[in-house]
Image 1 (cartoon, rainbow, N blue to C red):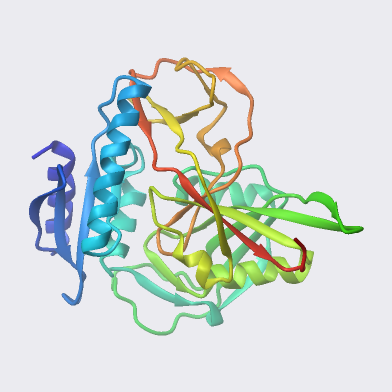
Image 2 (cartoon, rainbow, N blue to C red):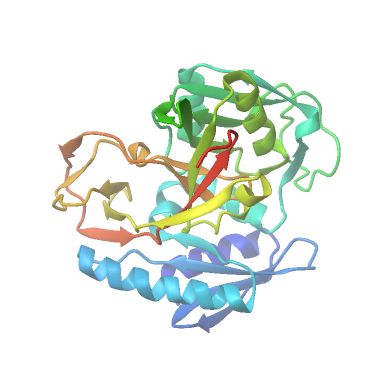
Length: 322
């Protein structure tokens, strides 16, 4: 059993969850159940050990096949990569517990949406989003007005009056179709507090943006490292196409992840991982947006690499066009 599997198991058992270990399609997985014992969950820890992009590609293919097979046998597994576990431990622990139904529940009807500035959005996303902040034009915060309903985590602090989720959107991309100007926007980020489940929160922020800006079109990408993007379908988005996997350089000392652009050498990386444009859905799903950012020479990386599993594009058309 690898150290990552052991670390996660120790954490879960320390929080009262019983765990067992299985070998599924060539990978060690952790099997446990939700807090109420009603549902089984599969956790797939992925070590980062590739020493080249080619090796990372092969490992990604094996892992993706395992994920697809596990998904057919049970639910989509919770994937925990070694770099995120070490670099963003607190956030990943909270997300893991929420996946097992140990979270504070909030409802969108008990919240209000406010426009916030970029500094506020950046501060929240830096702490609560796996890729941090990203370039954006419109920023919205979801604030809890009152707390009702089930609170699974009794020791959770009182969040009433505080911002519990953030959504950001790009400026418009414009084109003319049949004599009409179409304005398309990109949903660049969504993140909530990792140990809080907000029923209807993502939709409430989306509707606030639509009401204020009146877009013709909104698009985003579901990162398959996190989910299949079912949350977008629930919000009315339609699946369009897939997007190729992204290679990352991993600093083996700090576990910092930096995307590698096509045609770049491993010694070059995008200015910040935030420039990769990834947003997180309310169920822990991650959604990738377009890549921006200048190429710069990165520092020593520890010669580790990881390739994610690609993404799925979703689009919400609010104006009828072809």
